Image (cartoon, rainbow, N blue to C red; front, top):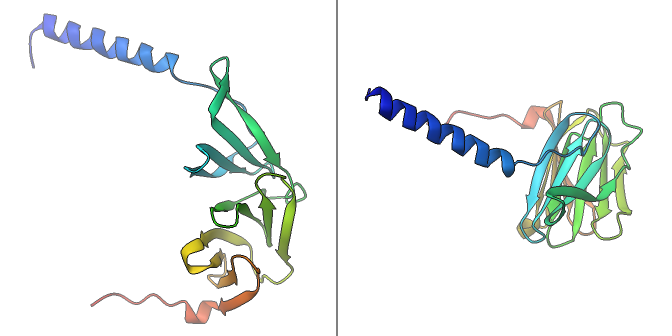
Length: 173
């Protein structure tokens, strides 16, 4: 295990390393409740966060003031949701974010922070996950009842609904 001098040296290095981490660690208050999902947007070097407080925040990771990042934009279109925003994704092609809360999907412009489209009142269950597949021109939502909905990612036209009975996973043989 080494001599006590080696162990002391290792411990000192661990403490120095921990101290260096503390200097590069930034605390920030973005949401007033749990963060349910985060998405890094490489094109903008930014972070999107979805929270139980009903807000989606856009954090610019390039611009920082006094060693802390700040929320550069926030969207609170889901503020009436009791459960908050559960999921989100980014369309690099459409330059919008889609967020899901309870039984509502909101599509919002990343620059103006305005809602550009809403999909609600068609879901039989709460939204668990949303994904944007720009290369396939689709937005896909998975629901708690195990059904899946697919829309066109620009026209937002409903393309397909796959009910629970058809969402059967079979083992690969």
